[in-house]
Structure formats: structure tokens, C-alpha cells
Amino acid sequence: MSELQLKLNAEEVFSFLESVFPAVRGRFSVRELSPMRVIMRRETGPNDIRPGGTVSGPAMFEMADCAFYVAVLAMIGRQPLTVTSGAAINFLNKPAPTALICEARILKLGRTLATGDALLWSEGQEKPVAHATLTYAIPRSAAV
Image (cartoon, rainbow, N blue to C red):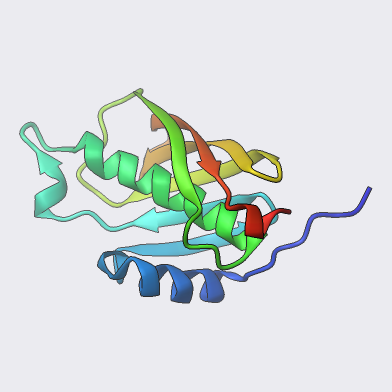
């Protein structure tokens, strides 16, 4: 069995990501990237905070979705038509109004689908705030 290797490093993934989704520029950063796994950080700001001083669900979903996209692209290369085909998120604990940290893992990388999960924390807190499961459709031209 061959060992899985990254096709893109963190800098290459983010250069590509920012070219196809310019709105992410400056809001996300990669802390660790390895085959089938990424740990990322997402800045939060006033537009992400809901009444009661909590980070909004859409901000947490965006973090999970972006982190999983980065993990998949790192494995398959520059494939802009790789898209979310299924996602579910469970909110576990009230997030603090701070940056989000997310660990996304690819659990199965097939020729046309990637399936995995993402666990999110508020920066500086121990308890996770959300857990997502995600499936991405991979274009046939990117078959692994």
C-alpha cells in the first residue's frame, strides 16, 4: 500500500483558495497540514457575533467547510469544481467570541467522493463547540 502524500502544501492551497474565493483572504490560516488532516484558525469579528456574545452558526459552518476543502485540495490538487455535496453540523457548546480553531480530517478519499469530519473549538478553550460531517464531490478529472 502506498503512503498518502500531499499534492499541495499550505501556501499553495491558500494561494489557490484565495484566487477562487477572494473573500477568505486574511480570515483563515493553516496551523498544521499533513496528509488527510488540517488544523486551521478563523478570525471572528463583529459580524460573526450573535446576541449573547456567541459566534454564529454560519461562521462555524464556514470554518468547517473551508477547513475540509483545504484538506481535500491538499490531497487532490487544484480542482475548483470540488464541491460540498453533503454536510451536517452539531453545535455542542456555546463558543466564546474569539477566533475558531478547526481540525478537519478526511476519513475516506475515493475517486469521486471525499468524506470526513471537522471538530471546532473557540481559541483558548478545551471543550469543542461544534462537530461537522462533510462529503465532497471530486471532479472526474481529479481522480485520486
